Structures are given as C-alpha cells and as structure tokens.
Length: 258
Image (cartoon, rainbow, N blue to C red):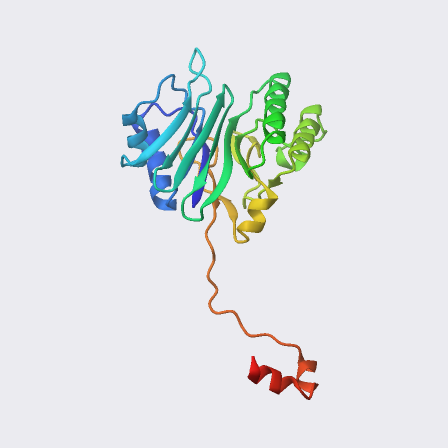
C-alpha cells in the first residue's frame, strides 16, 4: 500500500485536481490526505476528479469561514476498509484495515494552526487520542513547526515552539520518517521542514521495508510525502553457515538426516 499526504493549498481549480490525479497515477497511491483543501463542501465529482475513477471513499473536514484550512482523507475501497472515523477542525482520524496485508491501524491526517497556543491545543487532543488507543498509528500532515534549527532556513535560535514540537513527538512515541529532502515547504527565500510522516514502531517491525519519500511541489509550495509499504525483492536468500560446524564429526550425518 502507498499512502500520501499533501498540502495542496486549495483544491478548487481543475489544474489542482489534475496535479493530485497525476501524483496518484504515477505513484500508484491508494490513500491520500489532502491538507488545506479550502473547500467548505467536497462532492463526489471533486473526489472523482482527483482519482480519475469512482471506487473510492472519503472523509472531509470543511474549511473554516473565509476558506482557510480544510482536510480530506480519501482511499480506494479495495485497499482500505474503514472501521471507525473521528474528526475535529484540525485532524481526521480513520481506523481501518489495509486489505492486502490484513493489517489494522489508525491513520491520522492533520493540519496544525499557525498560532503556537492553538497548536498546543491540537497536540494535546492527539496525545489523548494516542494514549487511549492500542492500534498502531500513522500520523501525517502539516505541523506548521520544526524541531531543529537545520529544519528552518536561516534559523539561529531554538524557539519554545520547536521544543514543544520535539516534546510532542517524544510523548506520542512515534518515529519521524526520513524523507530524502531537507525542506518540505518553500516560498521565496523561506524554507522549512513542516510536513512530516510519523509512524509507530510496530509498523516498522511489521513492514521492515517501509520507506518515505517526497515528490515535486508543482502548483503548491509544499512537497507531497509518500509512505510505501512495498517489499523490496532482492532475489533468493543465500544459505549461510558457520565454518566451525564443518569441523564437528557428526555434522554431515545430522545435515543428511535433516
């Protein structure tokens, strides 16, 4: 399964929908979280325009008055079976089963506020959700904050917001996936790594070949991030043994017997 998250900065135009559809087709995406849709209502036609076909489901959080924010989480019906969904203004939480692997997990798409204090409120909501659920998590989206100086171009001093972001990820005990890119958001001379893909350690142990990566920004100033559960095939595994086994007189007899 391949999961994507992208701050599209508005999904109203046909060119933005084509941008999303191109990513889905090229990368064979089976679930996508779209951040900052800036839509108060998403129709089946809007979703079909993004996917190019109809066998999909979705959950949305409408944009606020004035058109800011808005979230969409959408997936192929034959790839993910929804069990439970919860939404708030800044996140969508979907519990379900990945059909190919029969793996149950929680997938959360979020868009944290620009205001530091409002951001803390959202993070506390997610802390509580995380503490009260046992399914392994994927948390993805636009966090509107960085954790380290090198994640923001020109930053020279650690801010309270950076420390709070680091503490939040430490508290929820999730792994911040490496994404092959220094910055995920760029506008003129400003650049930051504010978009992230966080996963549970249980997911890492269940899918050892899991990896994340970024694609081009195109019509948005944010890069999309993708999480691939693909198993990399490297051919037959070689037979390995310890040399001193051959010095044991009974080794060949045991070997033949087995």
